[in-house]
Amino acid sequence: MCEEFSHRMRTVLDSNGGEWKIVKPHCGESLAPASASPLQMDSGEMPDQTNSLEAVTEGRRPPTYADLFKSRERIVSAEGSEFRSHHRCGLQLGKVKFREAFPGPPMPYFYLAISLSSTTPRYESNYGAGWYRREPNSFVLVPPGVQCTMRGDPRGEFENLFLAFPEAELRQIAGEMLDVSGAHLFEAPRQPAHDPIVTALAKQVWEYASQASLGTDLVVEGNFLTLIGRLLSLGETKAIPFPEQERGGRRIVRVSLDYMRENMAERLSLADIANAASVSRVYLARVFRQQTGRTVHDHLLEVRMERAKELIRYFGRNMTFAEIAQRCGFVTHAQLTRTFTQLLGVTPGEFRDQM
Image (cartoon, rainbow, N blue to C red):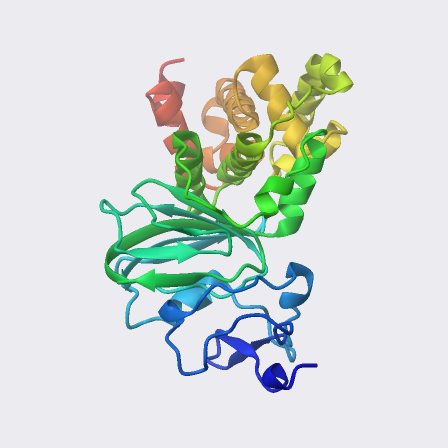
């Protein structure tokens, strides 16, 4: 082992303010002196990703991106920043405003960062594949374990939307799309990318992740799957073929709708419906789009609304709207009322009076 590196470890702050230790760099890896500012560090040789993230956790959980930004209270605006999560996809989300950019440490997640700023910054970033400036509405996808370095003036007024997600999610989705390996997404970003579809999908995931309801879980999952599919397709040169079982799309839709009708009172997830149809989540979402032109969530909402109207017609005033909401899978009477108003233009009470 090189004596030069035998006693040195790179560190990042964890949520408790302590040190999150990362393994020693390989011999010959370039490291700035301990006293150097992170903005003046050279990128040097990137360590092997499989070894550079062996965290010595000592019983503590891995740091999240919320931990990272909250540890920078001096430069991150507490009033203009918000963090969300979504348990089904292991998603971490944030919309962050900050007055000074800083290089992020290696983290064990994929990290999609979209610039919402209106101006181009005066600093440059480097994830090991070249220097670049973040332009407005551009994005970068950073794979796990990649170290960021910066140079230039980091000051300004910045705003980013980010989504972080486990590597396992990407590998599963890429594998289920057959010939797509997703290998290009594990490469350090060379330049920021521009794609309005990626930006729009990320914003949809962000908006719906804050709403705790039966239907929005499916919306978040569906948009997230579409977002990953879009990222996979942007860099793949090999076409994504349709599997042989595509011919059974109508059967899959029929089985899924039957399952929704029989279980609508439960909190159904995209995975639940996909399991009932014996297909993957990705494939189910794609089949529904191809066969019906609508999402799984759209159909689930329609199934619940049809049942609610049936119950109102049959029972009239002999069943309360709270009971109808519960039987149809709406979280509350208020959600039932809101859905009726949005889709039919009348409340459940007005619908009953019209019969």
